[in-house]
Amino acid sequence: VDISTEEGANALLTVDGFNFFSETVKKLTMSQNNNGRRMKFQTKSKWISIILLFAQNADRALFRGKIPHSEIQCWLDYVIEGIKGLTTNKSWIQTGHVTDAWLLLEPCAFLFCHAVPVVLAFESEFFQVLSSFIKVRKESDGRAMPSTRLCNQIALLVSSAFTVSISGFDNNWSSDKSFKKLEASGILEEFLRCVTEPAPQMKGGWFDAVCNTLYLLELSTRILLKRFQKGKPCGDTLQAILDGKDGARSGTSSKVMKRLQAIASASIMRATDAAEHEHGSCLGLAYGCNNCGKLVSKESLMNCAQCNTNYCSKKCQRAEWKVHKSECNQCTKTEFKNRKMIKLSVANVLEKRSDYINLQLTEACHTLGAKRNELILELDFFMNDGIVPAMDDLRELKISSITEYLE
Picture 1 (cartoon, rainbow, N blue to C red):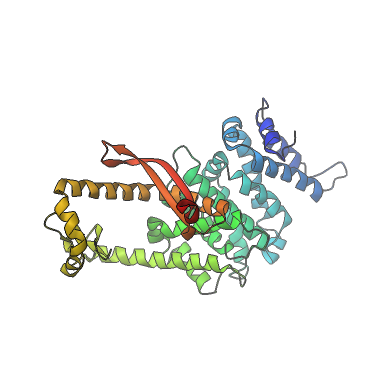
Picture 2 (picture 1 turned 90 degrees about the vertical axis):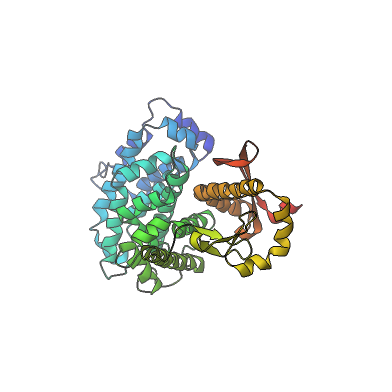
């Protein structure tokens, strides 16, 4: 079958007794031919490219349902042992490049677009071994990087694994849980270093995937608070990159650097908020002023006596009175309470599904060729008794360009 097409790759999945990965690994492990020489590079590259094409073109549902886990584990074990064997390679330590490394890792970036390989990679020592492999290179002079091509592959496979972990499982992980697993393996700090390497040949979807992962990291409060502070590996690595003491020496995308700076700023803000909360300065849930939008604690909140609309001060309440007066006189307290519940439940759904919505927005940017600020998001909610949207039910999500929406 022709696995360079979706039809051919899916046809292979329907074959009884699927052993594609284990048979390929057998051929690859034949390191000597009849003449006693190593398998030629072209031959090895051919077998590797077959796995890459298969992973790239296979239908995700069929891939998940038809391939035995043992087959995928066979390939991951082969990659793990191969990377371990290259850790002490002199060429790798001195130059940051070894051909066998990118041959092994290239198919993984596409395999990690499927859920089962990602689960098995987290359960095995895949990310730990990859992290140790990169660290050996770094230890040679303190900031030595893998080659550009390897950096791009590592950044892509980590982004792919993260994206699938929050959107491709039966019970999707939260961003915090996924980042926590990546951080525990040591690969998250190496990912931060690898994304600084310019990627002249890998724009478009690859670049969007990496930037989206960085964006969701910026929003992940718990991991920033616990793992990105001074003295923590990720925190120290990020600061060293921003100080110009780690990462690529030049050519880093300005968009990537802005994302890294935003992550550093967000981690400082989370630490400050936590410190204020510990000392009593932060008094719990914040509420928005109906006039200026300023967030204030419940204890500092002022309310309209008639309908309990929120204000941060008497000045704001007076400033909005001309607008608010007609609404306040027309609505009963029950009606205002129902309106408030609608706002809170909508905000709750948006917060719970933020990872999913961000992924859809990123995909829409790529599909429509538009920037985020040129898109409009429409949400349809299931209504409970015609009053309050269901707290967890996001029925439909529509994304279109503002121009298209207005037309």
